[in-house]
Image (tube, rainbow, N blue to C red; front, side, top):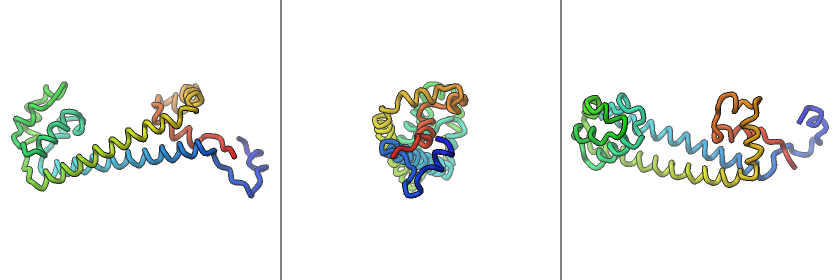
Length: 181
C-alpha cells in the first residue's frame, strides 16, 4: 500500500483490516493482557516471599519453575522447615541445596501462606487462560500460516533478523496486515 492508494481512498470509507485479521488482533491483544497479568501476579508472589524473608529468587533463577512451585505449595500447606523445603529441589537446583536452605530460612506467617495461596491460584488460572488463547490464536491464524512463515523467514523481516519466535511476531504481522473492505 502506498501514499497514492491512500490519497485516492474515499474519505467516507474507513481503511481497516478484514474481519479475520481484526479477530486475530483482538485475540493477541487479550493474550498480551493476560501475559501482563501473569507478570503482575509473579511479582506479587515474589513480594510476599520477600516480606517473609524468603530469598528463593537469590538461588533459583525461576521461582515459579517446577522446584519453586513444589516448595511454594509445601509452604502453603504449612511446611516451614528450610531443610525439608530445600530437598524438594529438582534437576540443576539440587546442586544448590545448602544455599537453598539459607534462602528458605524466613518467618512465614498464616498471612503469608494465605496470600501465597491466593496469588498462586490466580496465576495458575491466568496460565490456563493463556493456553486457551494460544490454542485459539493458532486455530484462527491457520489460514494465514503460509504468509506468516514467509514473513517471519524473510531475510528483510525484522523478526528473522532478531531471531524472534513465531508467537512474538504474531502481533507485528497482524498489525501490518493489509486493509481489506
